Image 1 (spheres, helix red, strand yellow):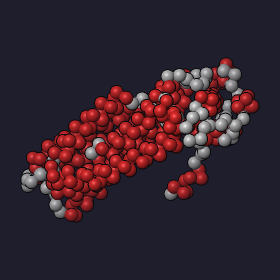
Image 2 (cartoon, rainbow, N blue to C red; image 1 turned 60 degrees about the horizontal axis):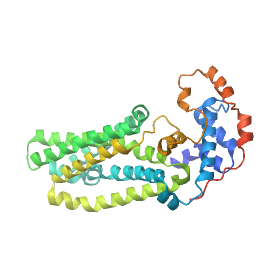
Image 3 (tube, one colour; image 1 turned 90 degrees about the horizontal axis):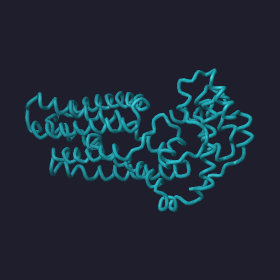
Image 4 (cartoon, rainbow, N blue to C red; image 1 turned 60 degrees about the vertical axis):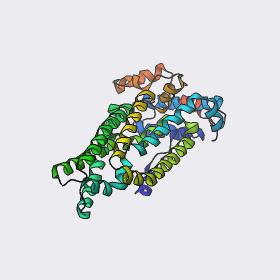
Amino acid sequence: MCLCLLPFTPESPRWLVSQGRNQEALVALANTCANGNIDDAAVLIQYREVTDTLSFEQTYEKRSFVSQFLSSATTRKRIFLVSTVAVFCMLSGNNIISYYFGAMLTQAGITDSTTQLEINIILNAWCLVVSIIGTMMSDKLGRKTLAAISTGLLTVFIFIVGALTKTYGNSTNQSGIYGTVASIFLFQGAYSFGWTPLTVLYPPEVLNYSIRSIGMSWYTFLVNGVGLMVTFSFPFALEAIGWKTYMINGAWDVLELVVVLTTWVETRGRTLEEIDENLDGVVHSDVPKLETLMGVPQAERAGIVEALDLSTAKEIEARGTVVEVPKE
């Protein structure tokens, strides 16, 4: 499926500009944002933002990643934010359920293998539906708010899972067993609502162009490293302390919520260049933000283009040269 869809995926406008293929970058933006209209104000504003920002990085960021990381607080902040996503998405407690759901059901009193399989299938279908809803809500609620809601809910539910497992884990009380399973479903739903979409949305948004490939490589390495630790350590924890594992994980989730609320930067409704402004504290382009176009009728946008002295011909002529971006 991926191979079939890939030919229809447009190339990154930022990469095209960095290769001097400015006309193609403009067309890619137009196809994505304005149904192919390369004279649309939103397209030209984004195009100017991209070229201005890459020019800035060419002039002021001609340093290696290590040099940027050691000398730039902004780069360290970006890597920190990416690292929080990598660690939190693997240590929120979802991996206990993903890898050891059978053991959890056994602890909850459900030992029949067929019943466990049926519950597992239904759980995965439930998570798929909730993750789709979360993805749709990410632009309405915002990334930071979505993460906070998801983390807050899953924290409550994992404490409930631990309490019910402690109380009914070795019991034949059917109500208690069903309550435990329902709590597991609610926990996984809370995780899927926020963290499933955020793992692919947030990291590339907070990384600027010059460090995005290295930053995403670090993110992937950290996700797999933490996942490996979870895979090997949690079986011993579940065997040694049982339900207390969920309580410890719940306490960690509280810390996650605090970190999200105090350190995350909101990225909803902003272009990648506008996100840079939130992190750097300065804007690298003199064009207005895209939000100024919100609610402006299409007929009036031509006036904005004229007032800003923007046009397709002028933009390509003025910015059609190669913008060299430092190699990582």
